[in-house]
Each structure stands twice: as C-alpha cells, then as structure tokens.
Length: 599
Image 1 (spheres, rainbow, N blue to C red):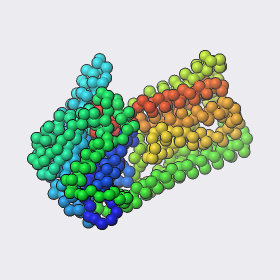
Image 2 (tube, one colour):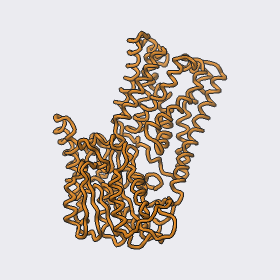
Image 3 (cartoon, rainbow, N blue to C red):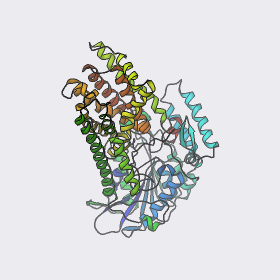
C-alpha cells in the first residue's frame, strides 16, 4: 500500500491488473507493464492512497496461482475493497477501483458495492467473454501470412469447442495443458449485467489500437451504466496503455514496452479520481510505502493484517536465497576440485575421478539447499520461476536442442572456412568407444554438466535474479558467475579446459563463451523451464565433444555465434508471454498451465 504520511483519513483506490501470474506491479515474468507503480505515483500526487497486491502464489502472497480461477480473482478483489474501506486511515465513502483488462471486468462487479465511490475501466470489454476472445483471435491472426490464417482459425475453433465441452479443470491444446476451468468461466461471463448495476461514476478508457478489446465496447458501457459514465477512445493507445503510431498489432508489444505508460492517460485517470473522490489538490508529500498481503479466503479482518515490511522481507528472502545458493555451489565445487588438483591425476582416473565428478554437482546441491530451506520456512517460490512438470513446456526441448548443436556446428565450419582445422568426428568416435558405447557416452554427457548444473544455474539462480532485472541482465550476470565457477577446471590435468590453457586464446575464448551460453540457456529456461535449458546445455557440450573443438578459432567463432543467437532471441522475442489479458492467444499459442478447483 502506498499512503501519504500525515493526518488522515485519505481517499484510496484499489488497483486491479489483468490476467495471468501477476505481481502487485501488474508484471509477469515475461511481460513487464509496470502499470501498478505508474498509477500509484500519479494518484499519490493528488494525495490518494493505493492498494495493490500480488496474485495468489506470486511474490509475498501465499497459495498457488495455478489453482486460481476467474471467480477467485473476483472474490479476492472484493475482499481487498472491504479491507481497504475498513482501515481507519482511509476516508469513508472515498474508495475507488481502477482495473485494467480482466481487472476492469472485476471492477465492473465492484461498482455496486457500498464501499466503492468511483470506478475506472481501462481496456475493459462489455460483451460476452466468448465474443471478446473470438475478436482477439481475429485481430491476432490477421498479422500472419494469408495461407496460415484459415488453418489457425480452424484450429482455434476446434480447441475452443473442446474446452467448452470438457468438464475437466485442465485440458490439452496442441499437447500443452490449458486452464479449461478458467477459460470456460470467462467464455460464459457477460459483464453487461454488472455494468447495469453500477451506481457510481464511471470512467472508461480504451485505445483505438487495442487489438485485445474492441474500442466500440465504450458505447455499450456508456449505454448500460445507469449513472454518469465518461468514456474516452484514445486514437493511438494500445492494450498496453502506450501510444503507438504504427499499425495495431501484438507484434509491436516488445517495442511498446520500452516506453512508459502514456502520461496523458495517467493524468486523466488520476485527475478524474481526485475529483470524484472529492480530494482537493495538495502539494505532494513523500509517501510512506506500506505493503499489505492479501490472503485469499480469509475474513476481511485477516485481510487487514498489515505487513509493512513485506517488500523488504521478500527482497531479503530473495537475496538470502541467492547467497545460500552461491555459498553451497562454490564451496562444494571448488573444494572438490581443489582435492582433484592436489591428487594430480587425469580427471577420469582413480582416485581423482571422485572429487572431479562431485565438484560438478555443486549447482544442483545449491539448488537443493535453497529448496529445502524454502520448504521449511513455507515460503512461496520465485515469481519468475517456470514450471517444468512433464508435458507442460517440453515442446521447446527438441527445437532448442537442435539450435544449440547448430551453433557449435556453424562455428566449426566457419573456422574451417577461415583456415582453421576442419571438423572431424574421429576423436569423438574414440571418446564414444572409451565411454563404453553411444548410450554410455550420451548418459555421461547428460549427467556431467546439464543435469548437474541447470537445476541450479537456471532453475534456482536465474528466476531470483529476474526478480530485479531483465532477462538480458540476468543472463549476463549469471554468465560471468558461471565463467568464474569453471576456473579451477583449468588446473586439473586432462580436462578440456586444461587442454586449452587458462592464459591461452582458446582458454580465454572458452571462458568468454560461457556468457552467451548463459543467455541462450536463460532464453531456453523462460520458454521451456529446466528441461529446455538442459537440452541447450547438452546440445552444446555434446557437439563440442564430438567435433573435438580445441582450436582457438573455433571457440572464438562459437562465442560470436552463441552471442548473436542468444542476443537475437532475447531481442526478437516479446517480453510478454501472455499479456495482461491474452486468453485468445492462449488458444493459438498455449502458454503456462493453470489449475484450480471447480468454479
């Protein structure tokens, strides 16, 4: 909660974001709208307090976001309004609600509550949910090649019918689990009845370039609301509440997110709420940021439970989790490898093999330590963690495995073309024979690196870094740490790193190549979870071993290729998987699974 210091009581507004795994700022792991902070800051200039909260199972709120349905979100919003209105420092009769996308639909239902004095609807639809989703689908596929559109329309239609027909909570679309219960409720929901019951002033704003909500619904909102309804259709505004002079398309979302929320929109909304809540303009004070945790399913008295340090404590938990991971990982790996260095033998000879292999499992042991402590403290998982349950995101494993191997192959053939040694499988065949055959070789390559490291680097450290930085920044930082972690291997005779030499060009380029490798595995993690990052790690390591990459030119070109591919993927892919409300896209391109009890 953000509330000014000094004498109260103050007017207040509850902020409701769209759909998905959203934190209090309205952000998901891959779509950072930052709507909550922008609205809160604008309202603070008028002395209006704001309350926003993490969805169930996200950030500081306990529970499981996958077990949260459409009706659950509505109930949580109603409980939050009651909790806000019951506070002694909030003025009676001066509580407003502002919702975006799905949040706007829930705000419509709150307009009939006695505690609510004003309602703001940002990109809220005013038709049957199924009609809104079908329009979204039409707007999305129009950007695709003409020959693809009929196929995707037919596919989306079949899957929509399948979701409507099934009674299961979760069904599969193109092999991916989809929250059928949430979708069924949304398909049958008609907000027009809620609009007709609103008894307070309404401000409705939709962008003329919103491809997810029909701007024409503004006319329906104005017609249905019995009282005063002020509607605005802003010409260049999109669903992300940014202005975009180009064609309306979800393909421009990545570019739009580089800009802030439209300042004119913020001024319009905050000024309107200030007038409706009868708040006279005051010089802005330094606000006192107080956080509340909304605990779903509890009485309003419990919802009022203050957690003034929840943001601070969440940050402390996140940092302490990272610190524990770093300590366990580096202590385990470097201690084991120090023993291997002292023993002096080849890495796969006795007794050096034992500490050598154990050292590689430092990251997974660090991950286990963090998870055990989190379970004991009953803390929620990181908001940016990606599910890796079988069947959820395994679609990405094979394409990313092929892409990873292709980067090494491309580097090897480029090196050959530039005068380096030609690619050869001779040493790789000998390595397979030494390992005891192809199966033993592949199993060894899978365990000795990907399985031993990825649950730690990507499954544990990466999502915690993502809580405070972008995917690019998290990948770069983790790449540097990962490169430093490998340094003792240069001093164990017989390792690939020792063959390169730490102070040689090959050794330097190998160390540098770890950084773009971290970008590529980070991209894979955000698409397919730990299985996808394991596939990338396995593909790169195995291809390097088979091609016997030991020339300085080859790892150097590998570093370039990996960097181009990793940065290219991060640049070309929008930050948002599902936007604040993109259920129609989930039919065309399914995203994360959600699951919950029946509505």
